[in-house]
Image (cartoon, rainbow, N blue to C red):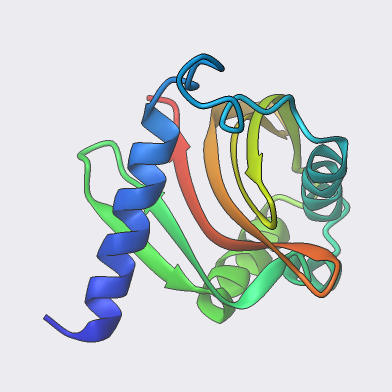
Length: 157
């Protein structure tokens, strides 16, 4: 197994575990049960707004240049993209459905210093077609800016 494959598997495992666990109680770890952070929710609002505005340059700036994006397929397999190839898929998807808009319907954010996870339910409206799902974000604050370092996407069945 190559180092790149080990990295992808490690990121996938962290994302799946982080997104599947319930929020820790404040009794077991007072720092873990952090109220949603307005700075991070504002960042995530920008993330969805830039995608919905079809501004892929601004959308792409929401990601670390080394970010990975993973799609969890209904059969449980992962499709993994680097940032460049992921943005190319988004460009094609938006060209095929120029009226498409995606909005966050709920967020659960946990932050420890300059690292955060966010569990976001979303709704994609594309003409008559409506799709819902969940994004699990791994975020890092770098030079004063929040960036997506890894994203796991799962559409609802």
